[in-house]
Amino acid sequence: MYKLKEKKQTKGKKILILVLALLLISIGIVSYGMNKTVPTNKSIEEVKATHIEEIHDKVEVEGKTEVSKNVNTQDVTGVTVIGDSVIVGVAPYLEELLPGILVDGKVGRQMIQGEETIKQLQTEGKLGGKIVIELGTNGPFTSNQLRNLLSLLSDKQIYLINTRVPKEWEETVNNTISEVAPEFKNATIIDWYAASEGKENYFYQDGVHLKPEGAEFYASLILETINENN
Image 1 (tube, one colour):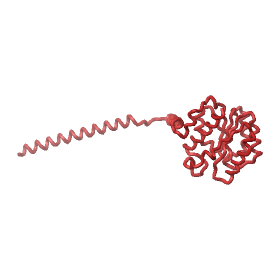
Image 2 (tube, one colour):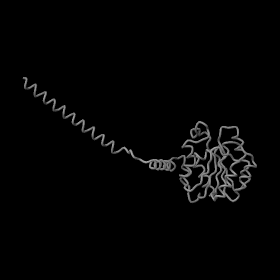
Image 3 (cartoon, one colour):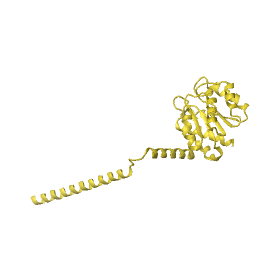
Image 4 (cartoon, one colour):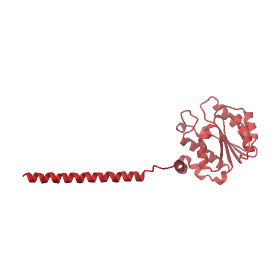
């Protein structure tokens, strides 16, 4: 009776040892697999490249930017964009969609400063044949100020973007653009105010600056308008 009990205990110990051994082997395999598949040395440049690819994929696949899929970059070369902080946020999407575009954005810039910016870019040989102007976020301007600016670009194709800003000058800015632009045969209005109607989810809390989805939409609107006028 004692020997039988001893044999059972010995057999139980062997089974326990076998189970523990199998458990340790399993843990080792899982650890090896995790170390093998999780990248720990990805460079910042690789991460940036991946992000750019994701943006490109979104632009080509998502319906909201479908219009940009038909843009021929050869037809829209020589584009210069002048704007304020809104265009600063949109710049990465424009540069991705339109390689070679020049975006000159500055936080706080107003229309009155646009004339100086144009003259500087002209001196530096950086004005393309198509000029996109996005100014009005930071304050109003007079009709004559806008006329003077547009007169500097008589040999260019001009695209004027109106504004959406929850400030008292929003209506003044948009009315001035609507009044003056028709006086210039080479000027086209990009109606951001109408295009962004009801799209509160595109904006950050300030109601002015754009989240990534809104910035993509804004960039596609610019490209659509340029493409239509080629």
